[in-house]
Amino acid sequence: MSTLLIIKIVIILIIFTITLVAAMYSTYMERKVAAGIQDRIGPDRAGPWGIFQPLADGGKMFFKEDFIPGKSEKWLFILAPGLAMFTACMTGAIIPWGGTVTLFGETFNLQIANIDIGILYIMGFVSIGVYGIMIGGWASNNKYSLYGAVRASSQMISYELAMGLAILAIVMSTGSLNLGDIVEAQKGGQWNVFYQPLAFLLFLVCAFAECNRAPFDMAECESELIGGYHTEYSSMKLGFFLFAEYINMFISSAVISVLFFGGYNFPFMHDLGLSANAITFIGVGVFFAKILFFIFFFMWVRWTLPRFRYDQLMQLGWKALIPLAVINLMITGGWLMFKGDLLAMITKMF
Amino acid sequence: MLGYLFYILSGLTILTAIMMIAARNPVHSVLYLIATFFMVSGQYLLMNAQFLFVVNIIVYAGAIMVLFLFVLMLLNLNKETEPQKSMKTKLAGVIAGGLLLITLLGALIKGNVSSENLPITDIGLVKNLGRVLFTDFVVPFEISSVLFLSAMVGAILVGKRHNGETEVISE
Image 1 (tube, rainbow over the protein chains, first blue to last red):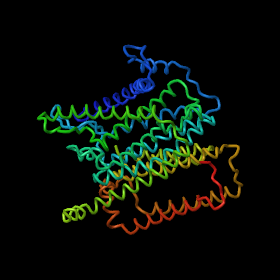
Image 2: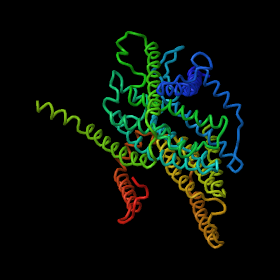
Image 3: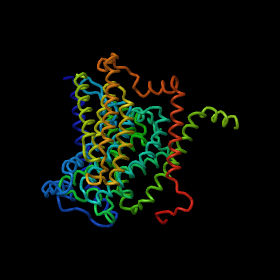
Image 4: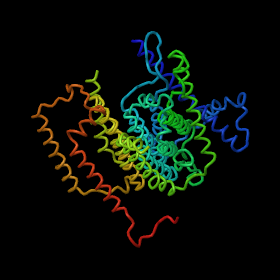
C-alpha cells in the first residue's frame, strides 16, 4: 500500500469519528444552550458539568426495547433510520477540512475526495436525504407518521430549489464547482459573504429547512403530529433519526463556512511567518471554530423563534426565497458580464 | 476491475428493474425504481461522466422520484384499492412490450456495440460538457430550455385557481 492510501484511510477514519463525536456533543450543547436561553441549568449530573450526558443518553437508547409495530412494513421500517444516517455521513467526504499538509515526504489535502463536482455532490445527497424520513414515515403505517413524511418531502423539494439557486450565484462568481477551489478563491479576507450577502441569507434559511430544524421542523411538529415521522420509532432507531439530524446540522455548518466564510482561511494567515503545516493546523482550528459558531446559531434560532405554519412555510419558499434567489442570480450574472464597462463608466464620471 | 464492476452493476440494474415491475405494492415499485436510477448513475460514473452521474441522482432519484413517492403516499394505494386491469389490457401490454424488446434486440445484435471497451474520455467532466453544450449544441440546448419553460407555464395554468374558486386555507 502506498503512503498516500494509508494517509487517506486515516483521514477518512478521523473525519468519520469527528463527525460522530461532533453530532454526539451537539446534543449536549443543544440542551445546554436551551437551558441558558430559558434560564435553567441543563444537564449537570453525569460527570463534571454533565459532559458525560451524551454517553448516558446513548446507553439508554441502546438498552431500550426495540419495538416494531405489528402492521408496519418491517424491512423498510428497519431500513429508514440507516438510510437517514448513511446520507448524513456521506456528505462529509468532500468538505475541505484544511489546507495542504506535508508529512513523510507526501503532500496531501485534508479532504477525503477532491472532486470537481463538489457542490453538486452535496446537492445530490441533500436531495436523497429525504428518503430516510419518507420511508420511515410511510413504513410505520401511522397516519401522523405519514403526514410527517409527506410534509418533509414537499418541504425538502421546495427549499432545494432556492438552495440550488443561491449556490449557483457563488459558483458563477467563483467559476468552479470544486469546494477546494471555492475556499482558495476566498483567500485574504475575500469571503463570499461580503460579496453575496443575499445568497448567504437564502442559503442559511434553506439549510434550516433542509435539516428539518426549527422553525421549519414541520416533519416532527410535536403539537400537531405527536412526533411526525418518528412517532412509531423507539430505541436506537429513534436515536439514529435524531443523530442524523445533528450530523446534518454539523455538515450544514461546515458547508456554510466553506461557501461563505472562507473555510479554513483566516485573516493575515500568510503574514505570520509560520510554516505551511502550522498554518494548516491553525486553519483547521479556525474552521472548526466557524462550524461551532454556526451550530450555536442553529440552536439559538431554534430556541428563539416559534414554528412556522405549514402554508406559511410554502409561501416563504415559493413566493419569497425563489424569486429573491433568481434576482440575486441575475444581478450576479449582470455584474460578471458588465463589470469592466461599469467600472470604466464610474471612473469616467469622476 | 472496472469490467467486473460493470457486470455487477448491470446485473443489479436488471434485477431492480424487474423487481420494480414485479412488486405488488406501488411504493415498493417506486423504491426499486430509485435503486435502478442509482445503478444507472453508477454506470455513468464508470464512464467518467461525473456530471451526468450527479445530475441523474439530483434530478431523477432526488426530485422526480420524491414527487412520485409523495403522490403515492398521498393516495395511499395498496393491494385492495389498486385498480384491476382486464385481461385484454394485460395482453395488449405484453404484446406491445414484447415487440419493443424484439426490435431493440434485433438492432443491438446487428450493431456492434460493446460498452465495456469504451475508452475513458474526459467529455463527461463539467468543463468539457459545458463547452460542448454552449458551442456545438447551443441551439438544441436553448430550444429544449424553451420547451421546459412552456411545460412549466402549462403546469401553472392547469394548477391555477379559476375565478370564483375560493381559497382552501383562510389567511
